[in-house]
Length: 334
Image 1 (cartoon, helix red, strand yellow):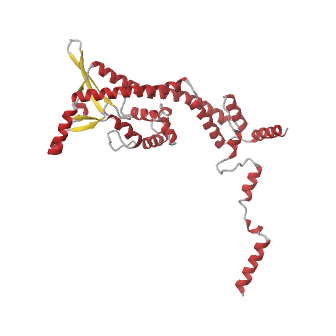
Image 2: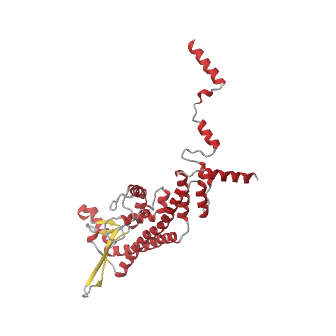
Image 3: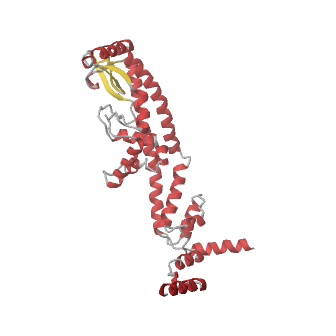
């Protein structure tokens, strides 16, 4: 019986609690967190796209090693390194790289003449998705999607590109992108001083190449089938970005409606009812337990305690304190 009365009193209390920005944000974040962890088809497609990429990355990087070492045999690399050690900078022609121009000549034009098909393939975390040797936002979009859980655990927003997909650069977007890049240890596309997750990822894919020019002028020959495998790998990488975008779009649509509803509600009870209708259990006691001051201001006892704590207590001295003060005064004048 007592429990029933307490539940009724709690319900009446919730009815009286007016919604404010803090409560709206708490409810929004709790419900959004449920949206992000629901086993939806879009989420499953995204997670699966990363698994497929990992498989393609492993296969393509192994193939790249075969193709590169066919062009630059390890024994030749070893000889050149010996010469460099002996003769210095004039023989400094071996370097490590993670991006390569691969080309094949197995196609023909309209006149039956052989044609060269080539493209730039970058196995680094921020390697672009369109064959360019220059950095672009797509590489960053892949990086934050690939390491989404790690970045979330570091209080970053790896969904910022997907959330701001249709928006131009703005301070909000820039702030979250920079935080993600810092967390990933990324400084710049061609910078070998990248750290953290970026360095760990990239270091797996460096291979020895011979030559002192940029990668665009050292196209490495491969077969048409090998070239196709490299293209399939790059498609798998782009698919991670695409599936991430699709999944976050579904969450954004739900969150947009959620914000509208919560903004219209006057009482906490309406927000609790919404969560319940969505099949989400929300602990209303937890919601109202603390506010920005850390106190349950809706609880009369705690509110009274907080107010009393603000009072000047000097007028409420005890008898012992008064006697001590009088004694100290008399001693000071003698």
